[in-house]
Length: 123
Image (cartoon, rainbow, N blue to C red; front, top):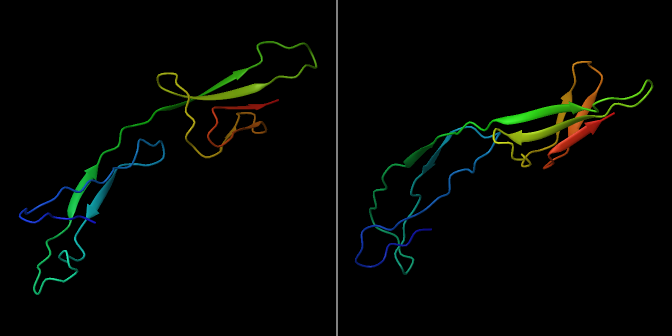
């Protein structure tokens, strides 16, 4: 709701654009006026409503790095632990996501990084 004060011809209205998101691409926000009433609730007799105001929201590419590491060495018959760590291009943790599942190149080993987590492991 926007209120235009007596004696003025406009009033600001702010609307947040989507936040920085690794899933969400660019988009458009379009808003218009559906109705107008005065301070007493009375409607205008012949109000001509203009078109929508549109804003193009551009996307910044969010690089996500999934780094795979493994136990450096094991003895014969030992257990190898594989770890995936999620970071951005600057090495900072990425943790605003749903659960992510990675299948390794052997086709059998699956590592899940839980929702909002930064690390997943498999042995």
